[in-house]
Length: 292
Image (cartoon, rainbow, N blue to C red):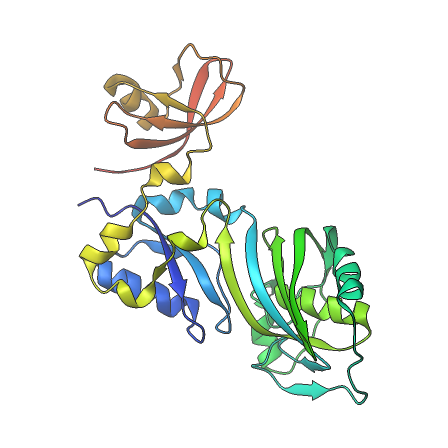
């Protein structure tokens, strides 16, 4: 049985992402699997898990834009940026805003935006993960990073609660975005709830509840073929001799009209052999899969 592909797990709130991964590995009886884009325990929603040789195609998901529904609470901040940390409330009451003002303030973040990563994150500074330092009460200077906000939509506003839908680039920290929006509104703010709805082309309707993936059979039924993960790329079909050549690190030549760049390499039975690079009709192996 070919246990290679992608599972779009709907991670429940409160569960550590690695615990979800352990469940999948155990229920599928596989050793090789990984998460593409970890979710905080507070967050729920789409947790892409790649299995088997599909782990070699992770970058095609990792670099995708992400979409979130986020609930932010005004007038309070936290050392973790969410409601799981130590809460510190503003001394002054939260002002009453109107929707037009909130829309104006959040629109200021659309486009490229510089973020300072939170201390409670997996980024490494001098070889040490920030969250390990944060747990010891150590705060270090962090370099700002450019992220991109595609769109922010106001979903609801009442009292001290704002609900937003955010479409953003890889590496965007929603907790930091919430804090920065609060600053633009003149108050403290923290993330009260977070749900990832979409990763790239994969939609919320494609997610599968972790609780329903109870054994190998149910996991295999929901496993997305590796070819779907790279279907945005042009594809070439190779014969047996060409496939053998590629697997031995040799280049092959095909007459195509493709522009120079990455291509999917498929065999005669439409299995993904891997990713190649084509330049002036010469195809070189870049990342090949070992699928029986």
